[in-house]
Length: 281
Ligand SMILES: [Zn+2]
Image (cartoon, rainbow, N blue to C red; front, top):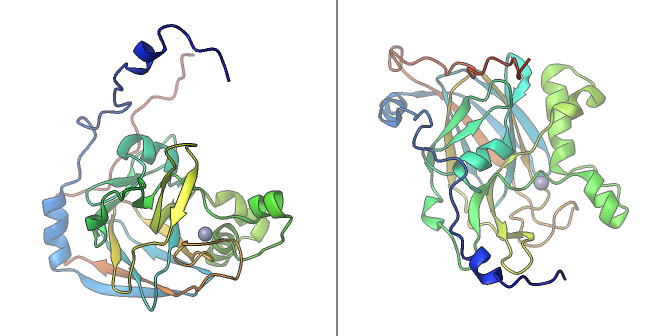
């Protein structure tokens, strides 16, 4: 360990500042969204098989709900601009803006150079969970997605139903791309229903059995036209292991709802980011 300076305590006592205060962040009109949701009707549904992924499409201004059915199950969510796959969910910036886990009123943001909201969390039946005594919270944007490369690195395995591979197959099927073409579009996820945090002693990423139960849901408002893919993680409730066929896994349900005509009067999808991209030249 490095040498302790004489003023170590004083340096540690410096108070933190929030990196990105969100007071100036464009706020969603939740009252408008809620009114639109009240008159919305279901227009589609998709079932995600255990240890597999399904793709789905929702138009800007629609709602989509992810529900746990049959048993506790964690889902790994990828979202893309349905009209431009290069604009996709940016987990790291979403984390920097909102914190390690998402809940009602917070948003999923897109990658540079668009950097705009792509989905807003409307309702979260697990918002009661808050933070547990281990620092665990639900719906994180700190994990990546379970993948076969890390499994191979750590254990020499060849496992094909990690969320990364499930999402790759789902995107390939949705777009007609080959697996090789689809794979680079798969990105770090929103871990729906997953309960995670960092250990206090070593700062390591931990998971624990999700508090999700059948009937629990996480619902979003689609800010732009979305192509999504959801993987029912091979870790099941992620209470023990992932990246294997050991854990009990269950299907998940995705439903889309369209508001009544005129219900979003005055609302427009958010514009792309206003930075001029001249980068000092
Ligand atoms: Zn997974």
